[in-house]
Amino acid sequence: MSKVLLDATDRELIALLRENARASTAELARRLKLSRTTVQSRIERLERQRVIAGYTITVPDEIEASLVRAHVMITLVPKQSGAIETALRKIPEVRVLHSVSGPFDLIAIAAAASIGELDELIDRIGALDGVERTTSAIVLSTRIER
Image (tube, rainbow, N blue to C red; front, side, top):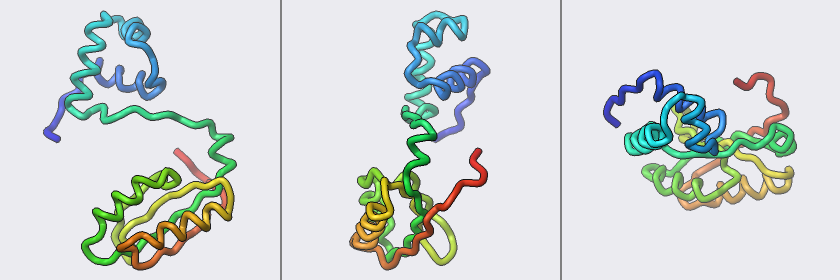
């Protein structure tokens, strides 16, 4: 992506969309003191430039807190990272995937409804063609989240 210059209005629009990605164009326009067509044009430009790469949802902390989470460290067979990443993207319980340096190639952050489901998930990850080994650490509590 080439360097994209954002003005103050673009940054404010992005901040409003981070608060509520479902806000109507009319609501955004009112808060920005701009016309609806101007706001719509800015959103379309930001999407085209991949400044806005997508929209997502936020699940309440109470629901997320009920899930069992784990960091799954994954060692790959050489030259298999693309295929493994593609396979992991298809597993909805994999929330985040990091490529890392050190003894592991990837770290997946996964969430499941129970220890049993988490165990099955880790087995599924380990069974993927190209995964050499997994090591997991179950999250007991979160001390800092920013």
